[in-house]
Image (tube, rainbow, N blue to C red; front, side, top):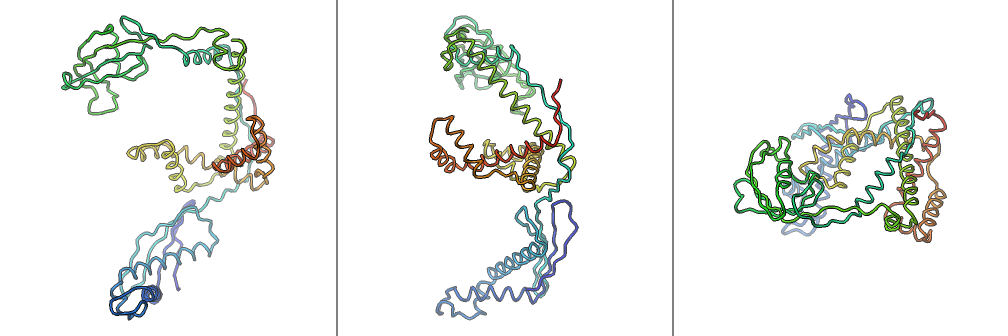
Length: 413
């Protein structure tokens, strides 16, 4: 098939190609589509495949025309990609298609290429690492969270306070005498607007209080912002949290700890481990940012959109909020894609990809910690599709070890 292809000016990874197909090539594609239809369609009075070509063309004109166009577009795209051995990043889009009888078929193909990541410089950078420090106050805060999670709620009489859990009947506005709903609310946690929380704390158990309440200016429903409504509240009951005593019994309840001192040491070690991991992660990202700054490259926007879509689905973002989410998430998506490309490029260039032995060793290590058979764990990971995740993690570890050897990391004083 004769096809005239003209590369249009593009930028970055974008490619726009103008295609013109002569009349005779269009007719050839239509004839081919018509022959395929004639060999398979059934028309009254004719055996399968024996209907006259002219009759088939007339009856299935639109379908034949559409098939011919699809064949031409596919052929043109294939020729564009194979001619220059292009590495395509996205599905092509056809724009401005013009198809008139007796005239050439013209259209434009738009697609994106995989970025050419040429990392000319990956060493000689200097980054800082946070000084990992865990204070006694950090440990106390964590212990208090543990106590809070195991706190008991006990009924109390009188007026509630911030932090109390209340059950209240609330009605407001025009439905104050008819639409009454009961709610459990922990005061001070933002579950109710401030004005309603203040009204609740004016009541004692069993009492009903009523007065005007102004809705805040940042209320999610814009139509209700700044409105003042009469609110009626009946306080049904109040419960107050009572934290467990800070003693050895708490430590034994939390886990396999003989004493409070053992629990505190375990909490400190855990905090240090998390802080160390966070500091290491920040150093990795700083190195990536330095490399990208020295070796800039474009990212296909189709990848960015797909990345954002995957996250929106994973976090069950409502359809109505997806466009806003994608816009806000765009810079983070681009950053993550660039990071992955840098790691992938270095791993390939320096032969740092995880091997089967690396994966087997990691699984054996995890199996020993869990007290399970390595073969059984391997099968579970394979079934859940997590082997790729382990391979990617091991490859990243190798790449960043290589980068740390070639760059300077200073610990903040």
